[in-house]
Image 1: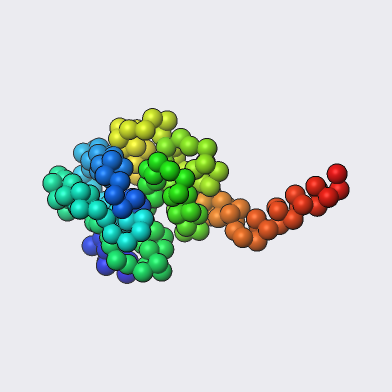
Image 2 (image 1 turned 45 degrees about the horizontal axis):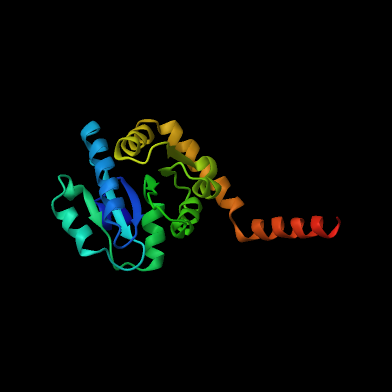
Length: 189
């Protein structure tokens, strides 16, 4: 139902962009262009704003983008629907430059969704083995990872399983247990 509503029944990548982060938006578009040139597929890209709506500069870039018909800017949806959009995606593309975007990664893990991101210790802490990481922060590296994940169905399945495991590690109950164990250990020393 989500794919029908937002992606014309097609597979898609999803990304959450800061409302006014034009540089990150352009980076994702350039990586998606590399993917589209390699694979002339019907794969879509859905871009959600971090807060409510995307900046006019982002919308202007979208209007001039070569594959604009395959990129959807999704605004004004309820939180429940955001989770459904993320859960229905092929993979989550994370290009945020700040740690303020890390919570969305736990949503991706709960949805058993592979994450594509750049090398970052904080991102790796959230995502663990459920992610593919680019060593360089550029569109070529990001595009190569999109291609790699799309081509390798076994890798995709492995990352989905790793995301399920990581979601368990990020659960509130698990965090409470670990905190309690730390407190007990500290009290016994």
